[in-house]
Image (cartoon, rainbow, N blue to C red; front, side, top):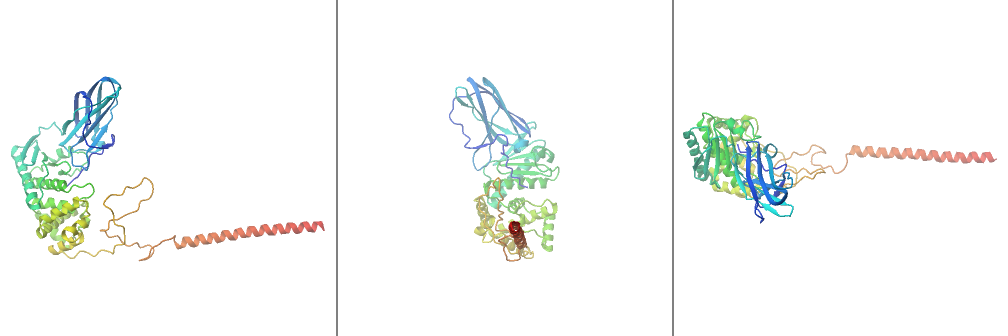
Length: 457
């Protein structure tokens, strides 16, 4: 399963968006500039800074190498007691910011100012975020590096060969190549792999970080076929994710998982049987429903994987891999999936499902209710204000049931009729009471005048 994790949410330090290059500054006198890792929880940056005048402030600038929409530099501001030589330290808490995948390349530098106003910038240092208590070893094959420990060399070599086969299949079967070196961190079991990353589901057996060109996986402990398929599956997620990376658009889950299943080489007998049964029973899931996350119910999730594989296989066998690459390019350009499908294949998601259902002998797609009129969403997300009620905008490809309020085909533009009648009655009652009071006042005044006249007589 693919887990694209966006991890640079530096909640304590804040973010500054600008190229990560140091501007010209006097030579910095920095000693013992290092990081101390308490994997997988924290990284502590520390150094000794020196100047000819008392140092008044210090800033740590840091970040990591990953595929982003712009260079990102985070800043931290450790406390400094003015002195010519100061020891600075700051800790990055992964439990607050989110966990980086093992193997991430880190960088950092120090900027500081003394009381004369002179500013100094240290040279940029680098380190690898990894649990160095394990005796990691590395095997290389082309654009693939496999890091491992706790297993014999033949097992590691077999997994390296499986990864190389995965790269070959992606190139020949889909038409995609890896963009740079992919690092695979292979753990001897699932427990070790899960302990290396915070906040991941405990059932996870493999993780793909396409933004980092990193794959994590644990060995099953005996099922070599499963292990080899897993590395091919996760490598495909990295290659597809890296190729189709977009700051706005996204690849629907059915396409992403279908490609990963396709490069594995086919469905297992059990998954094929489940797909065949769903075709016979007319219990297939719609392709639209598989655009987001798959169900947490194992049986439905497995069916979604099987269907995704079958749909992607149908697209490649009938239209060729070139069109599938064109589709990924359109999605990378942030085009909605229906728009991308129409431009490349001539049909939208529903048209794709109709053609695929016919190819596997499934009944026609169930008719959908008539959609109501709605605004077309833009490609740029809308930011909700702090106060106020935002309008609910639903993308046009999805069917919205007609409201049962106000009668079919009608639109209510004013207050409810019952409320209008109640307000009218209240106003009439108010006028009646006001009229009685005024009438009583006039009668009383006339009686008073008449009594005065009688007294004079």
